[in-house]
Structures are given as structure tokens and as C-alpha cells.
Image 1: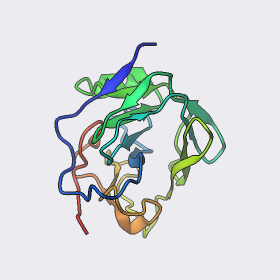
Image 2: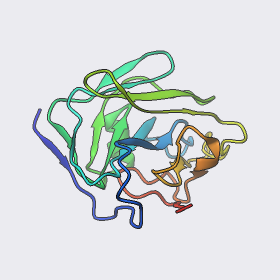
Image 3: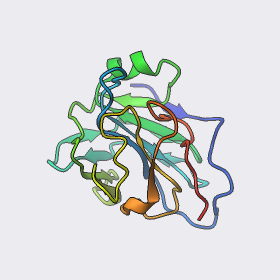
Length: 182
């Protein structure tokens, strides 16, 4: 595998730069609509001012299914990367998105579950336990919407910090369609 450098022109602005939270789980597509199905995916965002080497980081679901991020994967400051279940399905629905990797090969639960991101030393970097019932947004469950974190500096394990994407199919690899600077 080659070296991955991900860059995006549309990055979230007006966020505090003195806080370093590291990579966050920023968007989740866990159950697509029947008419638009890129399979499951999640987006990671680097809100820091630092480039982060994600070599051999591990994504795990509730059942401890794992996906190891390939060596030489670099996430630049302010950039996004999408982890997708099925690369071919994702590419067919999002041909304009270039900053993705996969195949993680297992699905995300339509009824909610715990998602975790670990660094190469197996230290927990981020986690979110989403659900498809209130107080979590319910629209992403089969309608073609995604769950979007409203601000990367908020605790992403709280339902109140997530919203339904305003863009059909979500915003993989780019700034979320919803943003709140609270």
C-alpha cells in the first residue's frame, strides 16, 4: 500500500485551536435507504492542528469485530477519512469522494452499538455508543440520512451532540451539513 495523504478544502472553521482532542468519530452511516445504499461507513475527523499518523490503528464494533487501518495512513490537520464496509459499494454511490479506506467487512447495527477507535498502542482514542431511538436522532435509521456530530469539541457519546444529516446520503469525507458552535 502507498502513503495516504488526505486533504479537504472544506474544513470546519471557527473551532477552538487550543484544545487537542485528537481524531473523533464524526459521522455514522449505519442503515442506508433501499434506494441509496453505499453500505455502512463512518467518518473520522482530525480537528487538531497536527498531522496524525494512523498506522495500524484499530476500529472495533460492539462485537469486537476489528478493522486495522493500513500502514502509512496519514490524516492531516482539519481533514477527514472514511472507513467503509464495502469499498465497491461506497465508490459506486460516492464517486467524488477520494479520502476513504476499507473494506472493514462487518456491518454496523441498525439498532445502535458501541464503536471504538484505538491507536497502534491499543489506547482508546474515541468511542461512541449510538442508538436508533430517542434521544438519538431516529431519521438515520433506513431513510438515507446519517448521524452527524454537531461539533467535534463536544462529547460524542451524548445523543444531544448528534443530528440528522441535512444531505441525503450524508457528507462522507467533508464537513458535516450540521454544525453548532455551542
